Length: 469
Image (cartoon, rainbow, N blue to C red; front, side):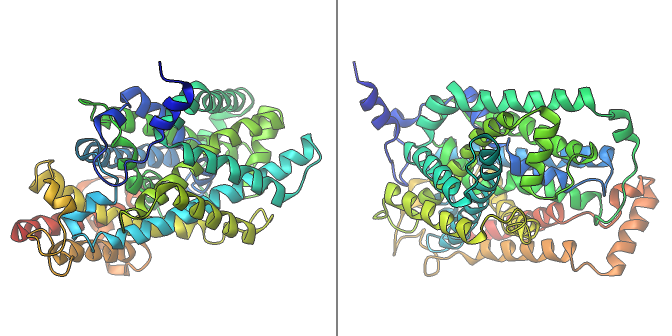
């Protein structure tokens, strides 16, 4: 029988960007449910949910959370299906769509966003650990805790998804986080005035209901470029859709709502992750709860570091995964160190960062869904993914402008609907809503940006895809 060391080495093997071999495809629906349920739970997720209230009021915020989670998770599951069928990482899936060189555009953007997410995760964990560690151990050094959490997350990334899911999440990490989340939820329900929270009106100040939906959609959307990096390891016959959709949906709704309730409970006076941590400690009774939450937060950073390295391999087969993991982790560490032990140091750009991610990846995947699921009927040929210069699949200099154009259009629509929409658009929305008798508060401030952006990119990509083929 193989030793544990040999089995771990096999599970952590790097298949590069080629289709994952049969022996590497070991994950089933339950594995994906645990993976994405764990990745949907975290302190930054709850903090993002806290941004919705009290501006919207809890009933409207909860509706935005459910609607946004269903939309975002459905798209996440669909892209996961493509990864399971083709067996390649997320950035390689863009080669037939954008051309091999064209796929470098989302690859660069994805690596940048993942380094940014790594820095945010490491920064938030180190800030909270410095506060908790000071209370428990007398260790308040931000730099010390930043080194600790960076080393732990890097070690998980070096292990790879099969090792992390089966040896860490399923045996320990996911259950600890779920148990702690349940404990916090019970404490909120037991000690909070839920009736008062429900009936308390919103204070305003947020652009509108559908902008709240945008803020929810963007969390699962931020995982879209990564989902195929894990679904490629699905066992034969497993699409990964059910586990991915259900796991992320349950966790996302739960922790977004938990963050909103923590604000309404009155214990969240400092609008930072550290302030949220203090609110959790006051509600749930102690710093040990926060330590357990930090254990779960490492999984998000693991996924960011690992997938940044996998994405970078799309540039060249000579790029090795493990050295790249170390480079990405070091870059995230450096940015987090520059942010420093300031509880609000990384928040000036956090919300803008989220909406910017939505504007890039929502329309991009609108084009992908049109091409892969409608035009190609869920199947790429190997030549579409790996044919080089001079082949019929090379395109114009390695680019396929027929897909890049609707992506740019969707990007423009997102920003136009989000911050630049003129008064006549708002009045048109009001008139249309009133004409069909829908409750206007749901549409106050326009239809948001995610749905119009996705629809524009999807509809324009369909005829252009037909011409290209």
